[in-house]
Length: 165
Ligand SMILES: C[S@@+](CC[C@H](N)C(=O)[O-])C[C@H]1O[C@@H](n2cnc3c(N)ncnc32)[C@H](O)[C@@H]1O
Image (cartoon, rainbow, N blue to C red; front, side, top):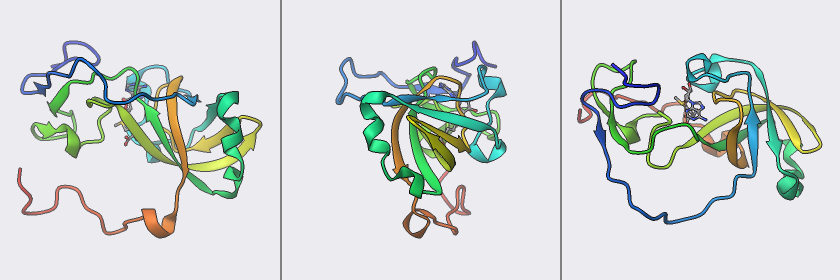
């Protein structure tokens, strides 16, 4: 049972995190979505077709040039309300404990999330997209074009038969 919304459950393992960081990041904007509670959020971008807004800060807006040529984008974002120390987790959907790096959970040492979104349109510094799964106000780290030719792996599997537990 959870001790709080982002708390640790029995059987979970945590890391002793280093006291200093190895890199710095710039938040280039934020994601505007309909969701303000984690329980209301979709678990992945295919669970909702809600229209969301990518707000890019004016200082970074020149980087949006040519973006409207893309039908789909990869968004990288910072799960700012996630816990960072969990290395073994007990997700509600799984039978038992799972290593963080085998999960898409927002709780991880670097709480970076990604989504492939459909680009609906652009107005000035804002992009309208479908396919997000994050809380309103989630900081944006990066935008990249999605290349079906090199990014898609239609045969990829998770939990394939015979893999180590
Ligand atoms: C399972 S994660 C998947 C995120 C991303 N699509 C990925 O694969 O990296 C999505 C969940 O993260 C949680 N979440 C969303 N926004 C968050 C935020 N800003 N901070 C912490 N947790 C968040 C919600 O529970 C949401 O359902």
